Length: 637
Figure 1 (cartoon, rainbow, N blue to C red):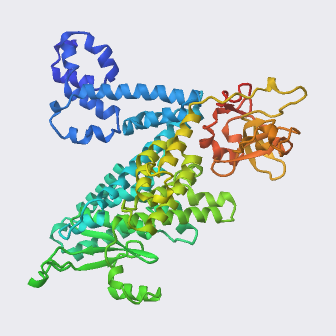
Figure 2 (cartoon, one colour):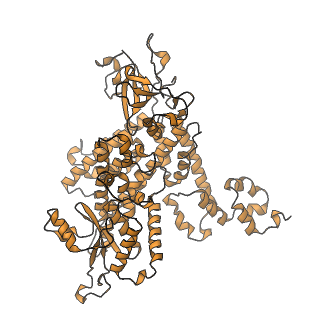
C-alpha cells in the first residue's frame, strides 16, 4: 500500500481539503517538511476561507480577492485573522450572558467587527435546545446580530446623504439622478435588515436573488437582445406574472396590510412572492435594469406603476426618432402588481382624474427617485404596524399580519417601526435652509431617541455615528444653550448616562435581608396568571417598596407618599412582544403549575420565548420555572 509520501502534492492538497484547518495547523504541518510545505499552499487556505466562513466584512473585499490571482492574498493570514476574531467574539458573548455589567459595551465591541462576527453569532443563535443557557445565548447573539444588520441598512441609506451633498449638473445621467447614490433593491432591502434576525436574505442575498431571476428569464428568452424595448418590457411583465413573482393572491383589506408585503427580500424568498404595488414595481425595475432596460417605479397617489424608457433617440419599438429628438426617450407604463400588459396613458390619466387630480399629470408620470420610494415604503410599514395595533380581533388572528417566519412575530413589532423612523431620518438631505424640513426631521429624531432608549440601547454607537452629526446640522440655533455648544450635546450626554448605568452594578435584592415578618411569596422565573384579567406572564423581579420602585421618580421610597409596604409588587413580562412590562401586586398573581417541555407552556408564554432570553437561561421542565439570568439583582431567586 502506498504511503502518503508517495502521493503527488496535488493529491495531498486535495486530501487536506477534507481535514479541518485547525488540524492542518496543529498536526499535519508538523509531521514533515514536505507536509509543512504543502500545508502552506495558498489554494488550500483560500478554500478554507471559503468553506469555513460564509460572511465577510466589506473591508476584506473578499469576493474581489476570490477573482484575483491566488498569490495576491495571504489566505492563511486572512484565515487566522478570522479565527482570532471568532475567539474574541466568543469571549465577549460569554461575558454578555454571564453579567449585566458592561453588557452594552461588549455588544458594541462585537458590532465593530461587522460581518466578520455574523458566522459565529449565527452559530450561537442556533445552539441546541439542550444548551445550558439556550434562551440567553440565542437572545443576546441575535440582538448583537440585529444591531450589525441595522448598521448595514443605515449605511446604505447614508449613501443618499453623500449623494445629496454633491453638485448635480445637467449632464448627470438620468439613472444617477434617480438612484440618488443607492441601488433600488438595496435601499429597499435595508428594511428587511431590521427584521432579518438569524434568517437568510440580507442585501447581498437580495441582489443575488434578482441576478438569478434575471438569468432565468434570459435563458427562457434566447432572442432577448434582438427585441425592441417594448417587446422586451412586455415579455418580462408576462413572465413575472405567469410565475407569480409579483402582486398578491386574492388580497383582502387585512392581508393587504401584512408586514411581509412591504419587504422586497421577503417577497423574493417567499414561494408565493407577496408584494405591495411599490415592491412589485421595484422588483420589475430591478430585473429590467439587469436586462439592459432603463426602468423605474412611478409612484402615483394610491398606486405605483413601473415605467420603462427607450434608449435616447429610439422609439420603444426600436425605430430611430427624428434628428431633433436624438436625446428624447419615449416611455411606457406597466402595472406589475395587477397586470401583465402595458397600461395605456389614457387609463392613468383617467385614474388620476378619479382621484380629483386634473392637472400636472406630466410631473406625476415622471420616474420616482429612490429616496421617495424608500419613504413611501416606510409609510406602508407604519400602516402595517398601525393596522396590527388598532385591530380588535383576537391576537391569534392578528399574528399573520406581523409574522415573517414561523414564530418570529413578537420580534418584529418594534423593529418594524424602528426601521420606518430611521428611514425618515436618513432620507433627508443635510441641507438646513428649509425650516419645515428641519422641524419635521427633529420630530422624527425625537421618535427615534424614544425607541432607542427604550428598546434598542445597544444602538448607541449608531446614534452617535449618524444622528448626532445630522442633529448639529439640522437643529435650530435657538436650541443651543451656548454659542459653543453643539445641539447634539444633550443626545451625547444621554448616551453617556446609558453607558454609565451599563458599567455600574446594581445593589442586589436579597430575601434574607427583608424585615422580620415580611415575605416575598413568588420567585423570578415563575409563570403566573393574572387573577383579574386572566393573561399569563413571567416574573422578572420583585420589590417590597411599592409599585413606584420601578418608576423614574427621583424621590427615595421612604419619601414617596404613594409607596406602600402592605404587599410585594412584581415586575412581569407580558403582552405581545415581551417589551411590555407590568408591575403587578402579589394579591393579583396566581401561579401556574407546569411540568414538562416547552410544549406545556401557555400560548402567550411560548410566544415570549425568543424574548425571554433577555432575563432567563432556559426553561426547566422538572422545576416548572424559567432559570433566572438575573442573579446579580436577585441572587437568592
